[in-house]
Image (cartoon, rainbow, N blue to C red; front, side, top):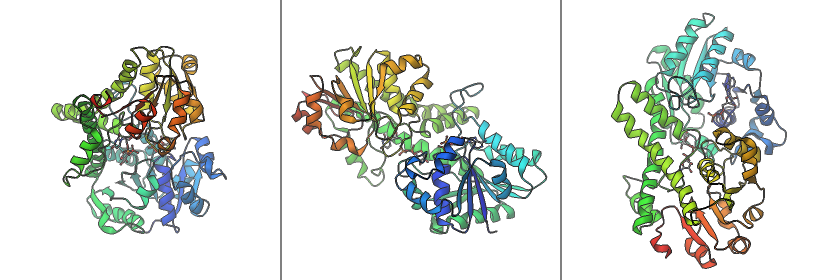
Length: 469
Ligand code: UDX
Ligand code: ADP
């Protein structure tokens, strides 16, 4: 089975880069990415590639080569569905904010709407590929909708979860550790799986393309994210222990990471993990475990989230405590708002929650982030609904220049590990801030001794206060 036309529903952080690389590597397949968000599609089609809706290193170059050749962005959802033999669903699956499973389960309404739209439009057989991260057994629900509301055409469902990380999306797509494809265990199922294997095999060695049954594939995505987040929470738990015992968390990470059984990755202590996936997927895992009555399993994984919330809270509390127990009316400068470097994505970023906690203490916050817009920052705060939008704008300012952002600050807090923060002229910053000059490094990126030699009271996650004396 040779696929000639692909449609992807959802032009977001996953759908956009994934399909761009798929198009780059398969010039003989036409790929149309559709989205109901007109502004987003317009940005993907912008002649100035600096205006793409997503910032990812290397993405501009991929889009430049494939767009208009065999990669298209459009709001004509039905037309693209009709023309495609294979349809990827890459819409958002946020945590439910209402009803049963509120705050835990994944909200599948966008998935269901996409399935109903495919069923309505399709007049020829289609392969439907789940790209979004979904609860295990969602494929069954999708199949049920397609088979009972469609026009009598045949649908095959595949699960093909995406493991790219933001900030390194293009590299991860070009050189993935593995590609996972789950499908039905039948003759048709195998043919369908092979059709997708062939598309990836144009640039990925076949040994790295893993095929499984549908449920293993759906569950593996949740489990991979849970394991990764668990490592971050584990090292963050240890960071607190380091701070009171005189150990240094970077040294501990290095020492344990050199054990080949543990490995060095995902052991960087931080102000807390963020991103659209970790929290959402663990909550989803916890919800699924509970719904099968597996309470110990649910409690075990929930602890990863509890630890992460604790890490964000204690970072904010430490700032208050070091600033003599009051930050009311004091200027605190945030360097970074994105949930990690090299992305403009801010979903679940630790910065949002640290800011909220400090604003509750009546701090005045100034934010500088090299890639996040002022509009996005206010939207993130307003979404919490802690205070009015007017109050958020009064108490928090966004400044587009870092040295200006730091002027007259009572404290500078590093929330994102952007490389440029390390390169700043910290001696110059020291002269412009209020003394005593505090720096709270939530990413442990600066050289502590250098900062102390300048005169800063430097405080970093996972570094002992004993060494600060
Ligand atoms: C994650 C998974 O890595 C990816 O496979 C999946 O497809 C989506 O979710 P992403 O959220 O984009 O990717 O970024 P990731 O690099 O995993 O970082 C997540 C969060 O953990 C960030 O806030 C990051 O700063 C934090 N983190 C990561 C740490 O605090 N310490 C680490 O050692 C690693
Ligand atoms: P992700 O990080 O998973 O890619 P995003 O929120 O960045 O998530 O992207 C999901 C995209 O899916 C959004 O741009 C949203 O507008 C789009 N979307 C959601 N539902 C539909 C739908 N029914 N038809 C087309 N696009 C949709």
